[in-house]
Image 1 (cartoon, rainbow, N blue to C red):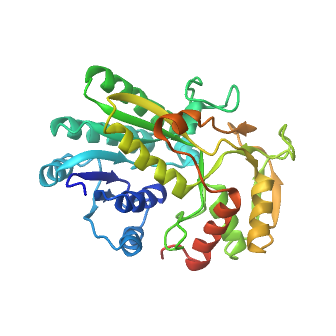
Image 2 (tube, rainbow, N blue to C red):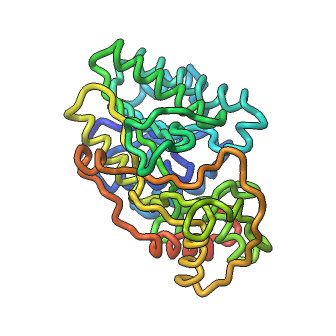
Length: 339
């Protein structure tokens, strides 16, 4: 057992909550911090139910310097897993300052607190949006970085700050995890993706149509150069993604420096393939309409995951059928989310 603990920021969110389960099941102690601006504390109660383990649940903001100092003073924090951040692309375009304040300024406060308390290990929740529109696929970690919206920019700015920190302090141990498209839910059906308001992501939109909350799905563009004209994305099961974080943390116990890793399956599926798979595994029809392409959407985007396989000894296990099944299981168990 580790007596040291892991501070998990944004712990109540979709990826944060699933990662809390994997950390607890791997024997780590955790402290969860979330301002609940975009998430629900119920998710963390469910994590305790699923694992049979308790941990401190702290409601607070990473921009709160006093709170951070209190946490680092009160607990023996060995590493930080940093998920806290706003993540809706459209909202970031309409309201960029909120994103820079929350994501960038928040991360600066967190990093300063880590420096004050001599905590060197960080696993950062980044995103494939740092690549912008892919120049070639599959995308590996050496692909040029070129974020094209404020949300992606905040992830890229943070990555660059972390590169600079690693250069300035050779004791730093930092993993940048660039996620592709997480879907699915924990197989218990107790936690999953729980968007407030209209979902920004495809899968919760599909499940809300299937459960009768929404009438139909909009597909943005069917004139891409792909097998069926709809965009291709690399969908990854959120539990596989969460396990990747535990692997990254293990890696940092032996490694100094900073490394970026793609977390995806390395396979692409079109939007229509995802819908057809969902219909097949659930028996539910998903009515949809085709609308215009969204600005900035690329036709094809999927990961080269060789680096994570070789360096982290991690590989996604679950296929798209399982992703659809688990998403539907969560939605049927929680027709109105965590409300």
